[in-house]
Image 1 (tube, rainbow, N blue to C red):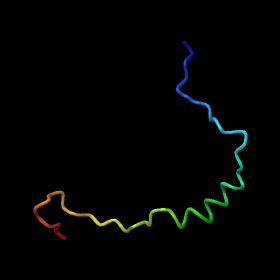
Image 2 (cartoon, rainbow, N blue to C red):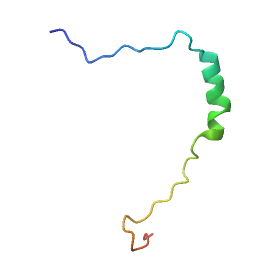
Image 3 (tube, rainbow, N blue to C red):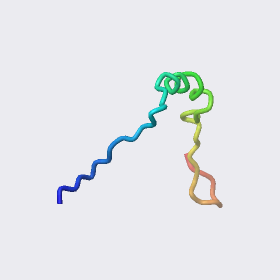
Length: 51
């Protein structure tokens, strides 16, 4: 049938690449989730996590 699993990229004509790059550089570091702060625990609710 000639089908392809590929989907074309749709971007808005009004997209401002400079504004997006500036937001990523200035704003995202302030609002993004800090890395490495998650603590692993026990899946059991009754026993503490072992180290």
